Length: 291
Image 1 (cartoon, rainbow, N blue to C red):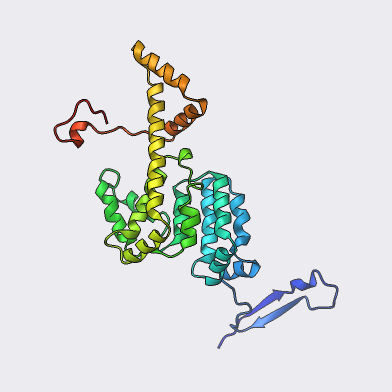
Image 2: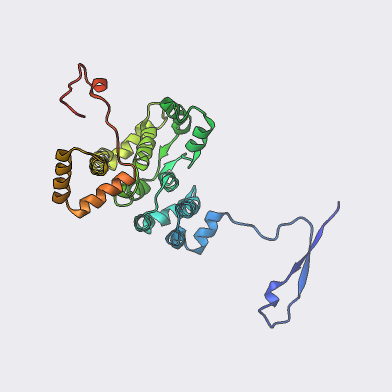
């Protein structure tokens, strides 16, 4: 049987004045070191909370998503690190950092959702939608794709859901468009959809966190933003009618500057919806009722 030999350099000689050998030779196939996984190394240096400064140093949404993924990989299927993150206030500190950053997008949302839900793969739904050519035109294609992806989702981490997702201070809707809350509501629907294997378990845990009250609060906040966006769009639209010009000037004088800035910001972020015609949503159609 053939044996291999490798020469190893003794690096301890660099910072030591003691007479030691400069190198060594190892024969055979025996391993010299036993490498640890990433989670074990993070546990050895102090736990996942040691990675929070990386989140604080993130300057873009992509780097923020990568730093969140690093922390998530350190606690994935590693109970000691997960316990250290939960007991050490890691989720509270993450929520505070995300609140200060205010650079949220769908990638950051996916990473936060992956903390709480086992079996969720960030970005998988977008990849499936890009493969399907009719995903953008057919609204039913998204539900067909989600059926394959969501049937084994398990709501596993209550703290992650409470501090990272069900936190209105973290997800400031006034600084983002309606895509983020719609995406999050779609994910919540995937947890309790009829074809989900763990729908009953997921619904109980969501009920513990007050998901109904949170959804109503979200709808009220979205309604205010849509109203502010519609007001800003009305003010910004040109008109030649003197009566309408007078009404706009009165409303602008009566409203504060803060409300005007809020409406402009809501309109800029996409909080504007065109209501459907009354004839399409009401039997008979009431011409005096403008929706």
